[in-house]
Length: 503
Image 1: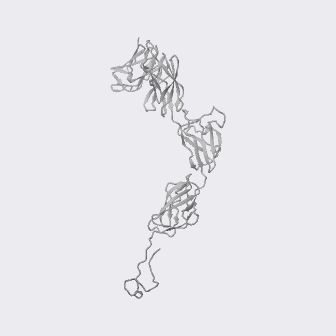
Image 2 (image 1 turned 180 degrees about the horizontal axis):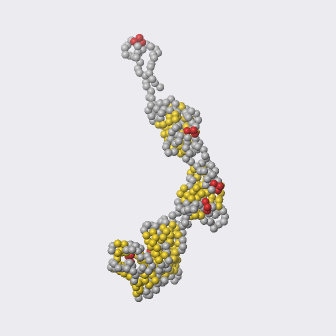
Image 3 (image 1 turned 135 degrees about the horizontal axis):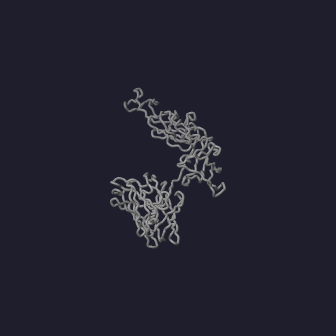
């Protein structure tokens, strides 16, 4: 039996006939056609054009359908003006439409227009032998990390085997769960397979590779309803960290990488175990606080904890644990929900003393290194420009490292650096170049030392001597004191004066 539906000149004449459970469909266009790219849909529903988030290209999405077949172009034959393809499992007597996107076919070597209007290419399924058909039913929800979706496949005929290879799932994989004893109902689970965030995806079932119990036609592809995939965990984008200078009278602000929302923990009412509460730890003690959803901004990107709630105090270490029920729209929990920081003490750092761990009078020559440790009132770090100490011989001790509340500077003695007592002449290269861990700069008014001390706290005696000693020249004897033998350098003077330099 054959059904034929003529259409306007812009669309093909559509005819269909069923033989051995296979419906042969012929689209006869006004001009010769060719294959482009995409798929052909046979459905009793309508279609919408949407943008594929993975490719950025338009594609068709079937809506309002109870039955759909997607025909890939490798299943299509083109002969002149005729575009031919087969479909199995079409409901007998059903009024079906053929849809395709722009460029699925070519006309004159150029992309042919889309067929998306119901009735533009339609037919009624002719009666014929029933072929194997199936429906894919997906559980409602969004496919996300750690939360598979159940998928049930119902076959029109008993089936012995459904290999995993018959499925093609976008951004997911299909895993077998169970089957009914009559072979008609098979249950699988859809598991996320990558970290792509995609709004519209489908599962395709290739009936040709299914093994029915009886010899019935089994070709074609069954397509599921669309499902969304979201496997990307939201995270904290910004929050207090390390030593921070905060306005303790203002709200504590935390931002997220994507919108989040809060939900109540309905599994327990015990406040010590509820996962929907905010916890603020100080030392070994903590407060558990009922979360107020109004603290979240309307767009879900910002959390503001009021000062009356957080009750932060200066110079204390805090550990804040966000509710585990803060999730994104797909139900993904926060990747990191713990925040640790230390509130600023409110005081500027001070440089308190410069120390060289040498005792007594110490002499240094060319190439010797002198380590000068500067101690501060609190832990410090280097600012934008490395600091230095200017010495009273015009040289500098260079910065080496910061370790807690101390900084190490090293001065290497060079030729002509001589000075009777090494001292610090200028601290201007220390001020403005050192900060505490909250970022507050050391200023000149808070540099409290003006000398170098030894390990006992006494003024250090550091002598820089780069001049080598010189022996006195040989004596020149006056004639009056000569022994009488010229040139023998023997004098009759019992206490001659020797002049030269030596040490």
